[in-house]
Length: 301
Image (tube, rainbow, N blue to C red; front, side, top):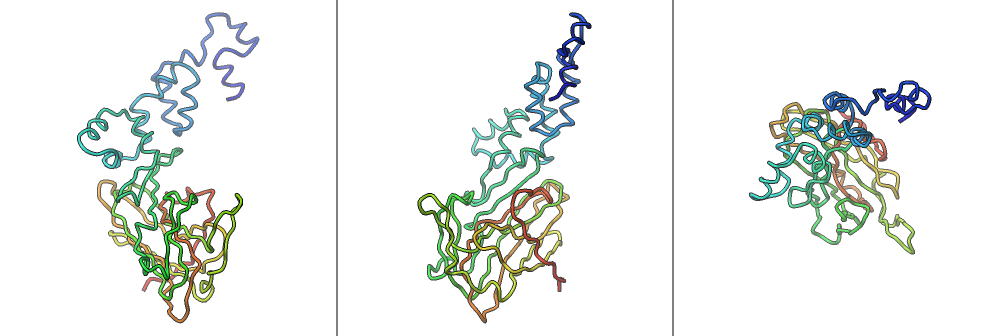
């Protein structure tokens, strides 16, 4: 943590010797003061500082420190964890640090086809909906679609389109989102990927039709927000997040219904060779590592 910490700890060579045995360092900091420091840090920093000394270790377990890092509606979120009377008892006994740790791991809901979790760094809600949670036109007809098992999906399965005239993927979710601005993405992949002798390969055999007309994305909320955008699908062989739009949540104690879709329904040509993995919802601006395509907004009519 640098030389300045060593000075505070009273272990900085000659300075420590000059100060004598009565020197006061960071180890003598009252636990309440240490907690005030931790309140100004992100959760990973709290965990690292807890290893520094006894005062910070004790403060790092304080309920009021971790409650400040939890979303305001964490009690609602914890209702998805566990079931029955035993689940209720465990939730009542859990400390705030334990609650944060549990919510930072994926919490499934909707028959396991949806899940949410807290971002470990900021404590913000993220959500994923699998392809099986979406309404996909023709999904039950094996001439058009097939479910493909893969480790490249957090749900271990994607929907692969071979060929179809009318392409439409629709979904919805009803949820109490903590206050904030969120972005919704469709995670898709052009081409059928597979492994051979340990190498990842991608077949472009069925890819066609996506350069004829753009795909249209729609997002609407139960409180009247509406977004409409479009773009061409590109970059075969890579997972891409297509940005459908942003929405604002302002009432964490009231469910908000989201409806969203991805469609290319021009029946003058077929289209195919597309993997649909999931729909992702993240706090706006929080995605740094994924390949994101911002679709072009259109006037709403």
